[in-house]
Image (cartoon, one colour):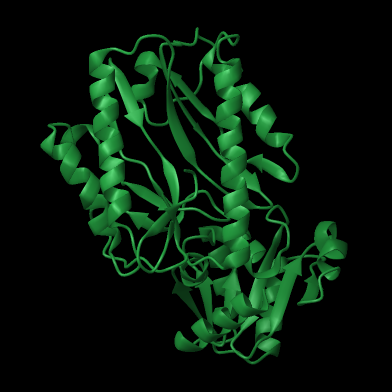
Length: 349
């Protein structure tokens, strides 16, 4: 935690800011370990100051952490923040442009402009630090992935007795929630037959098509996520379904062989995408190849045809090529991969 704060202080200096106002709950959790569900704002100064602004509901819990000064609002929290910034004599404060709601920005800007403080937008300052995982984070994501794999095993055991997509998704989520310090990372997708052609299908109370169905699930273990997708076949698989499955699987294998530190996100995406294009299904793979996972289920880096960002050792990404054929079926195979200096490790293998 201290190391991540030190990295953030350096970033603030590099931005020529006096401080950074953090409003994204996931970033506050990452930097302090404090609950993502709390209502508050974090102010980090370039010289190492850490201030947390909250209300009465979370004050006692916040004071339990010995890493910051806690300031409790009895009225307008924006006025309280502005007063503290003025007291510290700051002239330039950065804010998270992706995460600070417009009305809150307007309120703060109004207060700070009156004190001649430049309120400047920043993008992905902390997210870039978060994209490279340390040993503790890697261990937590590895454990989260193992729990998700257990959930697939459980789904395979009960699917014969479950009648609907919705019922199976509920049973999977119940399994995940009961696994120690674990929660679901996102609502579980169960999509049978033609429904599998919709990437974010919402499970229905319709009969589960057991000959062919897709499950996309993820656990959140000690606040760290994973994201996996598997296709299940019951009985005899049609030659066409087997063909599509094999194309997607091969595309994933080609992408995984490409991954190592120093390779761009675009290159990894291209390795899978070119193969799917060669097989004639280019227009049926319309999303990026994958994304980072960590405190959030979708975070930096993003693997897509436009992203020139270079992969670094310690990044963890999903690899999820797919082919969606509306009215027929959809196949997506998704695994979680740890980027290394000379290759990668499939954590979900």
